[in-house]
Length: 318
Ligand code: UDP
Ligand code: MG
Figure 1 (tube, helix red, strand yellow):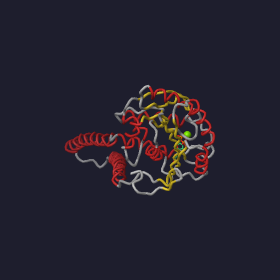
Figure 2 (cartoon, helix red, strand yellow; figure 1 turned 180 degrees about the vertical axis):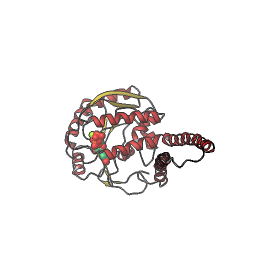
Figure 3 (cartoon, rainbow, N blue to C red; figure 1 turned 90 degrees about the vertical axis):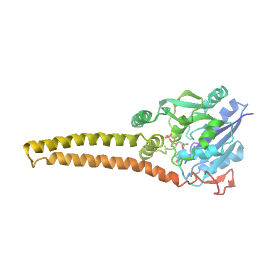
Figure 4 (cartoon, rainbow, N blue to C red; figure 1 turned 45 degrees about the vertical axis):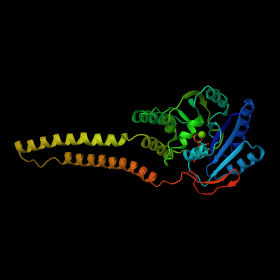
């Protein structure tokens, strides 16, 4: 029998775990010819998430868990889960029931048809503010323009991945991860299915605007060096303009003599160029910082405990 792992990153999700478990079991019962593994990655939760998962494991051995040594963020929790998942296919699911588990049988059907990456695209995003919706839309547009790989719009991490996609993703050990881009980058046969995203079942979103801006910068800087190119081109065109302007000033001075006025134009030029320089240095710094982080070659995460077993820090997440 084929084994399917359900990978669930969980950070402070105590309120939803039982209803999540119940809905999963109903789905599993509807497709009895598969083995299932529910792999929770407890991402340093501060509430009762871990004890609840332990309790669930007591009653149902299909459940297993990885307990990370602290909160590493969802992107890292996902790669930890992929490292530990045993299934022939892995389905990544949010704990908060925004990704309906009822879609799992459909995903499996497409997988059996030969697709390697069956991703669920949101038809609607209910329970999200229009600001979040429109900023998300603008961001996807920018990302598509600047990177050459097709990024799937309105798609989260909710998807089924064949073993070979999982192995591909496991080889990508960059510390600052933008998983959504990686799914596209690795390629393989993709299949889109549509669904309506529900609002969170309970609890609160772990994202705030600072984190989202962070993720957006991550997305751009980890998949394209276009901003570097842009600032170089911009600097180049400004220098051409400045050169022509210089010739004009020299000619004017030779023809009409020196004039004392010109304070506004000097100020404008200095301020404008100063701004551009700072911006370009900032962009370079953004990439330099990433190089710095990668050169440290740290493991991506540490596991405190896997299925009641204490883990040693050697070679983990490396
Ligand atoms: N999550 C995580 N670590 C974090 C933040 C979130 O593992 O630091 C998990 C969270 O438990 C949930 C999923 O990532 O299962 C999505 O988080 P959330 O629902 O807060 O994000 P949203 O749906 O609002 O984008
Ligand atoms: Mg959510």
